[in-house]
Amino acid sequence: MFKELDPLLHAQLRLAVMSLLMQVTSAEFTDIKEKTNCTAGNLSVQLDKLSAAGYIAVEKSFKGKKPLTTCSITKKGIKAFEDYVNTLKQYIHNR
Amino acid sequence: MFKELDPLLHAQLRLAVMSLLMQVTSAEFTDIKEKTNCTAGNLSVQLDKLSAAGYIAVEKSFKGKKPLTTCSITKKGIKAFEDYVNTLKQYIHNR
DNA sequence: TATTTTGGTTTATAATATAAACTAGTTTAC
DNA sequence: GTAAACTAGTTTATATTATAAACCAAAATA
Image (cartoon, rainbow over the protein chains, first blue to last red):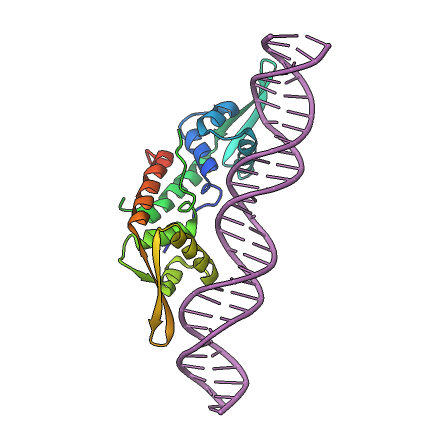
């Protein structure tokens, strides 16, 4: 009756990150941190998990002399997000 | 930018339970257990939490000689569920 | 050149979900 | 009538997860 909600996406911060990344081609660590209003440590951990699952791509480079971490959603991530949303609708349908 | 998702509702089993209870006037423990396909232990714990928060009312009686636990959603629970769904839409909007 | 800030990572702790074990009573089979 | 299995749960223990705190290296600032 209720399909499983992808546990990787059913977590507030990771869902917010994915939601953001669905709307842009890429985003920087610091911007994601500010928009989701989370701590850097928490974000770092959650980005790792999304990355390990292949839902996002994380690229490390430099902006001038400072490190720069850039994230973008992958095809797999888009699919997972869309599946998640569809599953979720089972739970909240008719609202 | 992203409002907090009520952690009491942002958990698969509790959300499923609330989703069910939104659609009926009341439901029995065993029926909820079957429909959500969870273990009795897990359900017992989660019902306690929802009940402690005042989101559901739990009544214990007997059906013949067997114990019968009946649950129903409260006004507070309905409000919380609707707020949760609205918040969630921030995360999954435009899908 | 000492202090603070930036951009993170790693590690520790707190919270949560889940499963396993248990209880109390009931029905069924012998 | 009594042992075995089943019903309807609760309690406790464990595994997972989220989150926060502590840390690090380099850069900018005072």
